[in-house]
Image (cartoon, rainbow, N blue to C red; front, side, top):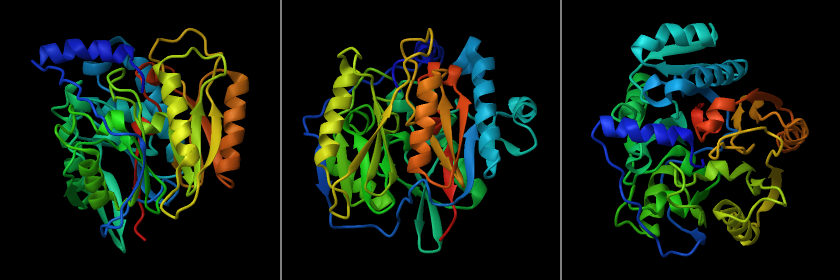
Length: 371
């Protein structure tokens, strides 16, 4: 996610709560691929693995202020679209439950639970499977390195797992669900800027981070790209840049040829270079599929997240952003249909959500079915 109006609003919220930004650290490690022999008993499945349900959260006025009506429309639309394919459990502060139920309809289950914000991919648990067992990894959410108040969201993962009676695994590192992307067979992609960062993991090396991800998610091969540090609230999550559509196939968000040369295009160029030579956990080269970003989207804020790769795979479907660039929207849907044959592609608007620097994937978290 890139810098957004929401981040400006959050500065005032932090001041009101007596919070302070944590300093961003630096990493001298080189981007590339690391392969480990060890493997834990747990494995994070690919997003195409059948889901038991999807978790979401209802936006709060505390964070969204004057944008609250628009972002609630976006979240309700996403929840209704997902509910056509699988159950949705949406968390809402007790005072917001009635409004959330009205907006989302009877297909969506609204559960009262204290939340600060809607980014369930990051505050919620990351589920892993082991044989017939399931567990949830609590990555110790800290507001993306102290950039946002998270007195409620820091407990969301724990509370969900308690509610679902699922084993909680407390991770030895700080991370977010959007900062990792897996293929389900041991390969993990991530940005160094997000994870190897003193605002989350002070003093920890890349080897330390890999050890934590190996122990909790069962990853054995790590593909690191540089990312962008300190320019957006997440320090550039991988799910805004690249995703596995299946083992060996990576779909990467591609800027237009005439895009200005800035930190974002440089990050794309570096990531593409790494992925073109990377091998996955099976020892195979990756196939890269470009997913062009929209261009004709009208007047948007500087931090608007205009990337189609922040889609969400559901049972028998894919929920994909619609940005209003008719040609780009149509082309993106066609590419996704080809990548996910047999799944229905549903496009939904994310006008206000995008202004907040996030998208559909950022606002959802799947709970996989047990094997």
